[in-house]
Image 1 (cartoon, one colour):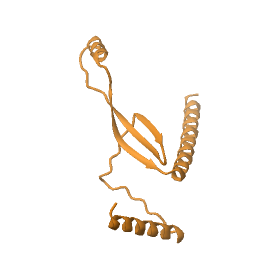
Image 2 (image 1 turned 120 degrees about the horizontal axis):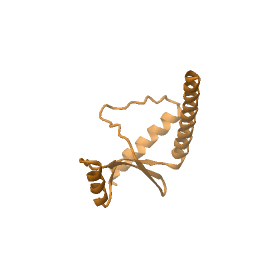
Image 3 (image 1 turned 30 degrees about the vertical axis):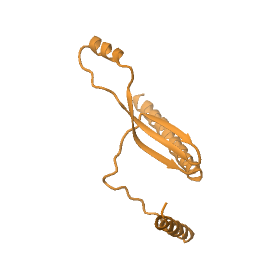
Image 4 (image 1 turned 45 degrees about the vertical axis):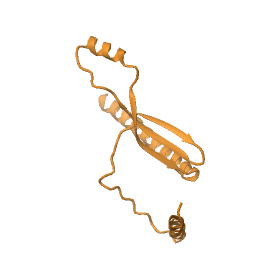
Length: 124
């Protein structure tokens, strides 16, 4: 790393630390160019940081009768899984990431069970 890059990184870290000390609010923005992709698979790795790799299956288009499609599928030796995103997360941020996911998953399950109960009530 060059001295210029090293100085810039130190300066950026200093600004980040100063911003955290004065408790500046974070304004989150998602630019239009950021893609929203679905992930069919996930690989988690860790060393000093955690690395989450998200994959999307690239299933070939197979047409024909059900028997022709089944025969074509049996000839495949694998399905490609293409990495659509990789996140590198520090251990302290990973702890918070897990907490947020658990909270949202709990809310999802609660909403799912209340929707199911409401549906059963309506059907009676």
